[in-house]
Length: 200
Image (cartoon, rainbow, N blue to C red; front, side, top):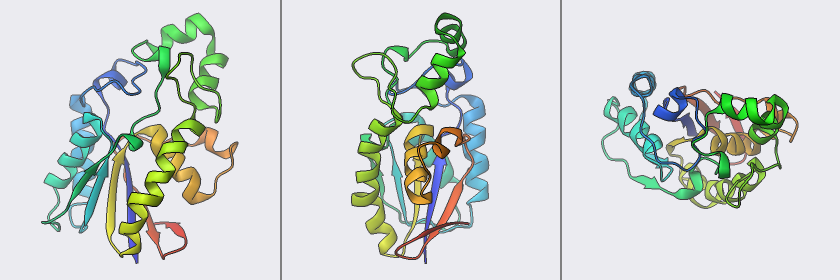
């Protein structure tokens, strides 16, 4: 039986500052490093065979901290890929979330943040559906083969890239995924029998 561990990176310095981060490459905050270390302690005796992270340092650093605490794993490849990056927040990146709510209204900002198929403003802005167009092929092409080989796989990524993966593997509807929250630094664990994922 294979195991999939999904982990949203620990709090970043821009999470702490209440800013839209997206593809901006910012580091973990002190709290984020503590969250990653707690996740590492929780997983310390779990043999992790392979690690997948995004191209962004906050996810990579989270994975590194987790594996530094791991007592069961010694030889594990780490794969980094932009397809696991957070969704791109377009023109909102770097803006304070409360200032943006004050300017555009709570409802509009909620639509940009939580709707399935409405992207934020700007040419680069991605909706969750657009984010899924890159994360789900990565799931099928890179992560599933590791699981099919019976491995325990750690995926350290981001709130929305992980939301799109959870939507797929749990069979959530477009409506159900809107209320799905992926907290920072808390492992979400599934077993995989070659066909179906079951939340552990």
